[in-house]
Image (cartoon, rainbow, N blue to C red; front, side, top):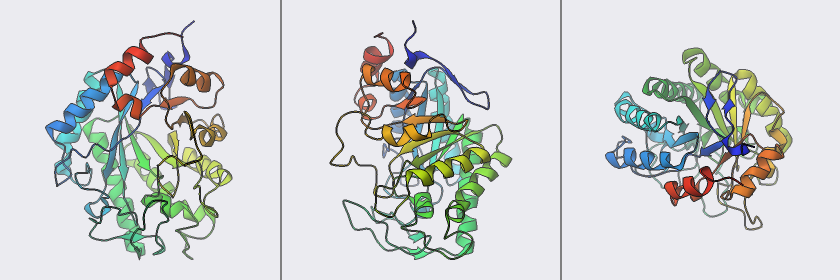
Length: 334
């Protein structure tokens, strides 16, 4: 019997992934100072493709220079980025995998101190476990429109570059996570207050992308919860997921929330975020990705067999040696 990790998965749009393994977006910091891909960036993704995963995601790429959160971050903010992005997508397709580009804006989470305009929904400092972040200014309605235009323009560039998917980064305390969370969004207009309003900026972005780039599949990296008292709950994210899928999202990539991506001290073993993904699996037509220190065949097969997730993201274990991972996990049977 074929191991479940080798089973293809077809999205509602018809895009088929050859297996259930995903390389999640991981910052390589190999772009130049203008956010353009370098030969090192291209070589990095050729290397990751040797893992045998059916989907290789390309690292978080800023939609505006003011939305950078680290130096040498890949960009999708300008047409000058297109040649490099096209070469990345072509390299991955030539290796026989599907690929997506993750797009982001740091909002108030400028941990590197390089943003020229730190902004957020309410001018509230983003909480973080390991650092004190700067206090952003409150965004105006013009800022909101500009953000939406920037995200949509970046998605159109992903489409032109030949990516199969675009992923909007809504987790790890970055810009869109700040809009969703009641901890950082305390506005009193149509983009704040109740959950529906806090999700409005994101739903409108997804809707516009589907209208202007209908070929492109859309996925979102969302928090299963914020992990802070008073933050987004599992129930909140279940409702937001319903709205996202109705707007056209086909994959929910479930990660951590407002405090960042680091493993909590009380979480041990593989799949420390799978318990946040499992409540969303099978509740919509979207495929659900689980992540969190996953590396072994037994664990991958178990969470697929028990239908906790539809797809399994393996980051560090693949980054440490894609070819070795392929030999150990993708070319072996239970």
